Amino acid sequence: MKLILSCEHASNVLPQKFAYLKNDQDLVWTTHRAYDPGAFRLFQELLEISDFSFTYKFSRLLIEPNRSLHHPNLFSEYSKSLAKQEKRDLINLYYLTYRNKVEKCISELIKVGEQVVHISVHSFTPILNGIERNTDLGLLYDPSRKAEKKFAQIWKLNLAKELDIKIRFNYPYLGKADGFTTYLRRKFPKNYIGIELEVNQKLAKRNTFPKSLMFEIKNSLKASL
Image (cartoon, rainbow, N blue to C red):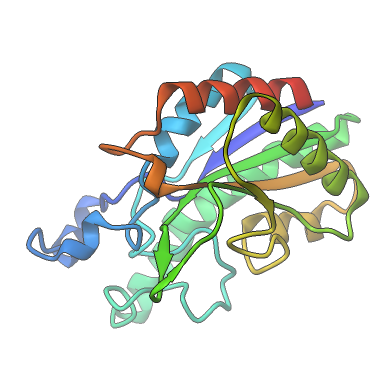
């Protein structure tokens, strides 16, 4: 069994070519709409137990690497007005370059008989559209895939042994909604387990989660493999 980590919303930065889209006075770029606060630091904590890891380095407000190409929110209000060639460049140079690297790694491992556990590391805003999210940590998976369901259950049990927090399955999002892991499940119907780890940003300060929380997430994941 091999552990692959990915972090699709690690940063709010832009490539130099598109830096003009970002206005430092626009506070949106400091919020969850631009990136996942705390996610990259948690991703770094988990690197110690991973076999392979991948980070998407640019803001989701340029192009959203966790959505399908047909998704209406692939481009944000900041990038929807770009010329067709610029959008093609975003898809080919950034979106596909990143996603193809992850997919190739998984494909090569499965071809030699390995089972892949892919953890996509995210964080979520505590309140969305005026509604408070009622969990501290979410494990998102596809309930129709037995191996994913079993892994998520084992991980939740291991998390609950050490952490006094609320943990829910497929919340605050559905695991089978449009996303990178959903795409990869279609590509790899066997020997692929894709879990999105979602941690509530209310637990983060200055773009990082408490060391004790990250340590227990790491140890519980290690014990679940």
